[in-house]
Image (cartoon, rainbow, N blue to C red; front, side, top):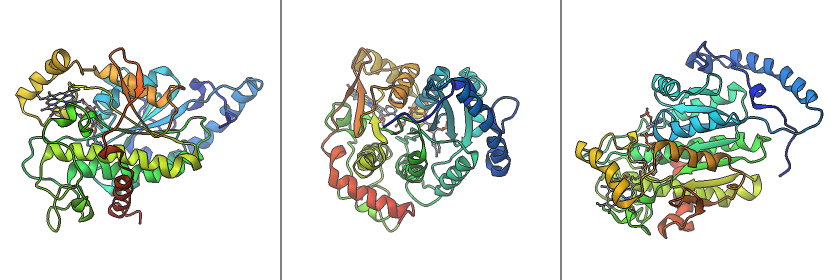
Length: 375
Ligand code: NDP
Ligand code: PMR
């Protein structure tokens, strides 16, 4: 795809439209489309002046990346890495606005390099509102990173999203499924040379690995629970129709993430040129993902991963890995599940049989479309 006319040094590409004195977009301002529209109109002139002053020399404009769940762990580290590069404006799509604001400040992210926007993936209404607000902001969308997740290994009973779906699959898969489908149109309109949609996967959803064989193993079965609406009443809360198991629900949701990426690739890569990718960033054993696990697990898990499995990766390093998938010119291939070896070199990894089952991906897609109200 040709490099579009474009064109401005990152420092000039976006002003802090609608932001408070701390550089963070206030929620009220974010939702105030007309105010933002007015400010966005204001940035056009400097952009044009900048183009003229470059005398035809093409400079890649600053990219805009939306990262869900950027208030901690992998998402925050990725946001920081991309913002620091100066090449990206990061939209941190988070359910807890204040937590995200504090996290960005504590991470030392520069004012104006990021915007915080409200998104609760446990509510499909919230997903739609986020998309509307993002569109009103007037920013282009170049890369979307579906990163947020919850893991409920000690839950004895299922909990449910606002729409009545089991929480882990509802947040990790269904919320992102709707978000990515809605924002696909925005990415199609972007003039950025390398547009990417990234859905974070995991080794634990892949039963072709040792980690993926730790019980309970991931498995979607014949999808009867998903097809039945995952509501725990008329159908099971588990995708395969079985008894509720919080750890399995997370792993199942990761299979859905990896299948969804591949189905996006099959449906839309050729037509749109967008690269669809998933990844296993390494075992980031210190993140908030394990907040609901028993204290002993949280104590032993990091040294176990560091010294026994050697799969441990720091939050900072994992952020650099995901930032590579967002931005690195050598990682433009679509339909790929990226992993890294010990020296932190990326490679295309092999998914398990189930996580690469095209027929299952199609079925998951079709059922998910119904559950999120796209058909
Ligand atoms: P964290 O718990 O640190 O980050 C998860 C993020 O998701 C948080 O920002 C959290 O918000 C957000 N989130 C949770 N629920 C919602 C919701 N309803 N709406 C919006 N955002 C929500 O975990 P990690 O950084 O470890 O996880 C990030 C990704 O990495 C996940 O997709 C996970 O599956 C994947 N991964 C992690 C591995 C690891 O070893 N940690 C290994 C392989 C993959 P809040 O801050 O408000 O809680
Ligand atoms: Mg695992 C090479 C071995 C390896 C790797 C890379 C991981 C990653 N794990 C490995 C092995 C083992 N784990 C072994 C042998 C055991 C049994 C002692 C084991 C156990 C274990 C538990 C109880 N591992 C876990 C848990 C969790 O609760 C984590 C989980 O499944 O979260 C969903 C987990 C993980 N191990 C990993 C990684 C990356 C995780 C977090 C998975 C994720 O975030 O998707």
